[in-house]
Amino acid sequence: MVARRPGVVVSRWVVLLVFALVCAFPFGWATFTMFKADADLYTVGHVPFFYNSPPTFDHVRVLFTDTAFLTFVRNSLEIGVIVVAITLAVSVPAAYAIARLTGQWGGRLAMMVFIFYLVPPTLLFLPLSRIVADLGLQDTIWALVLVYPTLTAPFSTWLLVGFFRSIPRDIEEQAMIDGYSRASAVVRTVLPLAVPGLFTVVIFTFAFTMNDFIYAVAFISSSDNMTVSAGVPVELIRGDVFFWQSLMAAAVLVAIPVALAYNFFLDRFVKGLALGGVKG
Image (cartoon, rainbow, N blue to C red; front, side, top):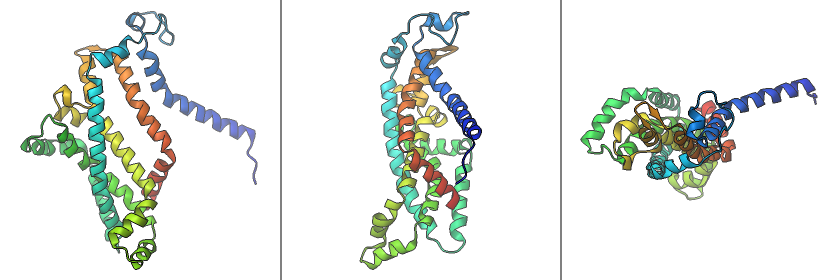
């Protein structure tokens, strides 16, 4: 076993520390700013890295009482859950079918699906707008429920193809010999082995629905139906006036559960991306 030199170990920890500080700085700065009083934040000459006046929770209160923040959160959660379910319902059978194709067609179809994902969302905006308008879904959460799977399903399908290819056919064939149908064999043997990939799809899809701004602003105009990513800027940016502390509070409160989910499922998420990318 080769011993690591102390200098190499220290340098690696220094690099990791710098990387962690750079990544954590925006969240730390947002948390620090959300408790600043107006006089402290906007007074020229005050040191921005300290509280020159006592911290205050007034701006957090403004976020909950003077805006529809909780409504935005509820809408985002509802849309996210529905879109995740639709994405899984579409991408799982599609990925399994592509993975089990023999010859070169499986790889070609997987690459074609991934190319569809690479199409810029701005190119899809006009046709999707026409479809939403013709269906009478403008200014409803169902407009986003219809649009988002067209953006999440291609990537999720491509990612899951790699997982299903890594699972030997013998497993499901043995289940079919034991009397199970193909669908039952897939549910009982294949899907449990593809759990890391499914977790990756769930996290990716939910994070996408939470972060999207373009479609949420374009298709939703009333506060009752807006998502967090669209509603918070609309209500807290008025002309050239930015309510910075409340904006930062919203960013921190929304980022915390997403960050916890990523941290809790980190191993599965990394495994899903790595295996899906290599095998796909």
